[in-house]
Image (cartoon, rainbow, N blue to C red):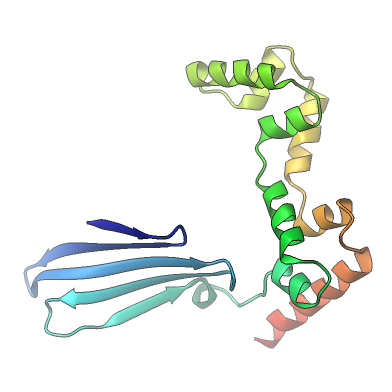
Length: 179
């Protein structure tokens, strides 16, 4: 049985038959908190086995905690939440969208290329090159645009100064060394 609670939490129950314990029912919950940049996975035995217990697994347990750069920039007042969201959405843009936004291809050309992609299972950039819509230089440019880091994007859109970025990176580094 799968139940969804909002877009940031998924909870489901499952039953497992154990020759030692009999039927065990587990509740598995995955929660992602955008506010705290944290992923929690909780596993609870809710029926069977004679005892209820909960195991919590977080990303922080797996690696040394390092605060997210965006969270640091917002907390220091260098950028707003809205500016952060705009930059993060820029990082999630797909290749075809980058090519259209930069006028290297038209929306119609992208639509045609996507149709070919369904038939051929080839990467969209290669299809656009094959169809003569773009050159290798255009593809490389677009791929490099997609690799930009958060700080680069914020500076590029004019909401962050390089000195503010460097200060926040130093704070981030210091924070991860302290933990």
